[in-house]
Length: 90
Image (cartoon, rainbow, N blue to C red; front, side, top):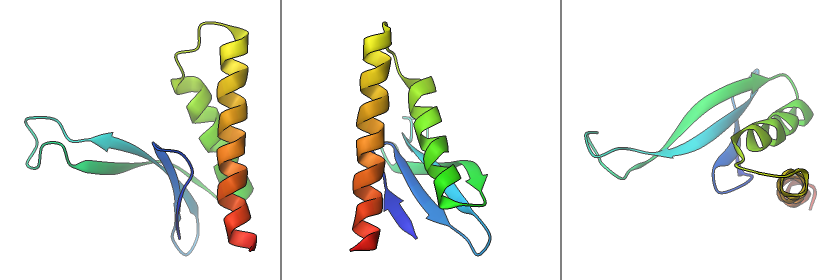
């Protein structure tokens, strides 16, 4: 499984877990500067919990300065998750 949820988050899996990964870009001192890297940030026993973790991480990473901005991040992330999951059921 390899499902991109947002530009910076995706879900992958192994035989036992759903894995949330976050995108980063290799720095100038890296072997391949500018290379897109995906780092595992959490593992979950269900897809639902993995999706909730994506939402949590997006909210924690947000630079929202007001409740309205935080709600907007929450809604856009929920919409991205729903769009990604709806592709699976078709």
